[in-house]
Image 1 (cartoon, rainbow, N blue to C red):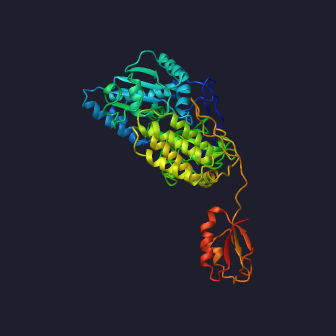
Image 2: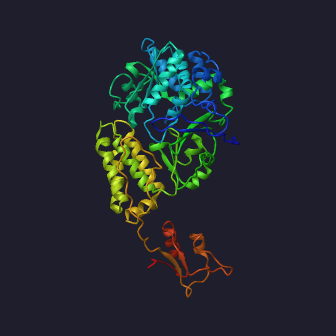
Image 3: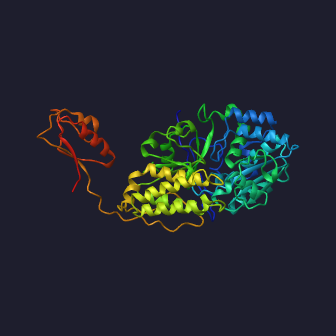
Length: 510
């Protein structure tokens, strides 16, 4: 796909809480008009997007299927299947049903829901009302966790005047788990806003016990755009297999609308960044990809699956060279532990213990500390009342796999000396600053040595450790002593064993 050229940055509204800078890669859809006004009121919204068509339930399901619309809150569940499940549930409940917009966004690395509800709230409301009217739902409830967002949505509701079905917004407690399905419906129903701990489908029993269509803010905004453009028009952007656009939060501060299939590096460049030491995709339940993989990665579900990564809630967090990735990981693990719902042992006890062991390892706790981290990860997996313990464990495991030498050096007491800059943002009750050890003298580097009295120029060593051993025109190694990076040690030992003349050996750099 030939990616469109990026457009200029769009203005942002000032506020007491973090407000993203907006940009688009190519013509914006969800962010359309925001280069001319900081907020689309009802008049500006209708002038830009036009009136919303009315669809029957069958037409709505067909539209979702034809556009392959999926939930943009993290799981990527097909929206048409959600609609069908709610329709079936309402048939069994005397036609009672509700629509819930999840605008909680409890993760500080994500601001796309905030961007939509602050700047283009009517697009979200359009999508929710379109679904509610087609389903025959009695209520549309919008759950948010920021006062400025609540004010914006309440203002948008007032701009519309009386509507049917009933439309309301509720300010919920701000915590990471507020966006979990049962926590959202519990909170909107007047309950504590915590996960129920039971496998309950909202399509069967959601808000106030009735079948509920629950999806996140961007999903409803995409539905409103698709209804106006039609399936063919909607598919003009993106990939044939993954049509449309998506919203990304880059670096925790910029919300960018891009078509599916855009190279990751071009999105980072638009935001004045690069892959750095690696990129965390999908937020704090997501996955790190290496700088090498980031150079070739494109933003689509299929492409990212090759790297074991997902788009999740759309967070893109590069790790700059001037920050300590081990310290950043500890800081997020501590914050995630503090965000526990306080309902089950794996969260209340397991996540703080995992964060403590990780901090001990980074302070120089040795190999035993890293093993203790892995043991704590295993202890919380698949044992929580919700997915929070599993997601936190997955985040730590991904960091350990992405930065093995960083964690190993820290565990051995050889700190990197770089500060923790907050490249992975946390908010609210922040954990204490993570102190990473100053850089100690590096351990003596091993070297691969050639004994010239034995070497016969077989050249096998150059095949086993390419890039370390380079052969001269005569077929013999160019050097007798070569620095040996830790990652090449095993291959060097293999070269030592395979040398027919026994002319190689590995030596410490004392």
